[in-house]
Image (cartoon, rainbow, N blue to C red):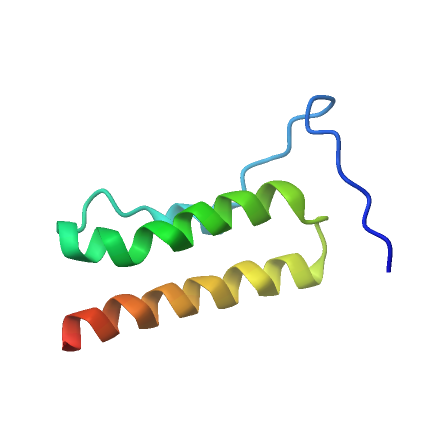
Length: 76
């Protein structure tokens, strides 16, 4: 499967609403450290993946993974 890079300078892509759930500034510092890599990855994926059903599933599952990681940290 070939992968074409998208020219992000032509048309701005709409922000995917699910990305708002990756905000971490409101969390205590130790949970920010857990959540930050997920935010960085979702920002990258939201901009680079083509908009289709699998794009939506990937972002949703990443959100689930982030939530599990934060809960794991809370549980110690």
